[in-house]
Image 1: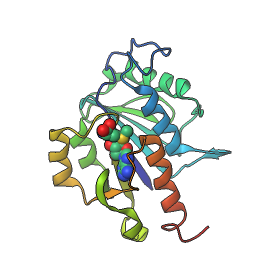
Image 2: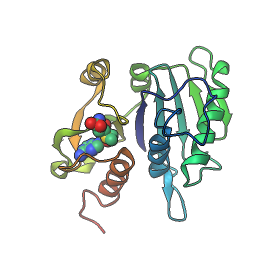
Image 3: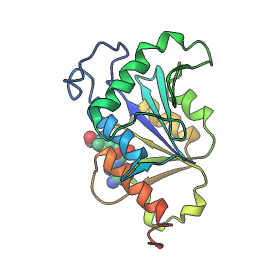
Image 4: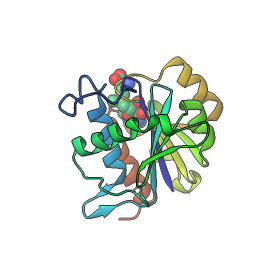
Length: 198
Ligand SMILES: C[S@@+](CC[C@H](N)C(=O)[O-])C[C@H]1O[C@@H](n2cnc3c(N)ncnc32)[C@H](O)[C@@H]1O
């Protein structure tokens, strides 16, 4: 299982944003949706062994499960429509029980810390200042949970959480990348056993 935790600092909790304004009024949901599709979509299929957790404003977490997802298309607008529909159902998430607005999608009343604490696996912060991933044997990262920020830097509160739950902080290369490209590189690194098997 590969998991990705994406932090959406500016995505609205209220689902009244326009699908025509994802980069503005929806708090860069366009970029987050590209990361979601990069995590799941193959040329002719979907990665079933992947889960993505989109943490919104440290209040809600929308979980996407590749083994059950339906109607995930490569375009960001239709993915944003799935996010907006999930937010419409947020009041049905009570305590630890999630709302389940559509197949493979659940909405939890959980912020960043609670989401990370609920996941099993090796928590890896992806950060341009981390250790080089090229020097890490992928088998040493069992059931990886990769944590990425959005267009903002990780907040001080998030850094605090990561210091207590994260196992590693890894860099994918010398350049600062878009998060969706970082997700693709991580898949490639794992698909090739650390760039060794093609
Ligand atoms: C758009 S970047 C954020 C860039 C930064 N916060 C900024 O705007 O100054 C989104 C995320 O992609 C990941 N990322 C980008 N470049 C990376 C790199 N070279 N190595 C590892 N992770 C990277 C990090 O998790 C980062 O928070």
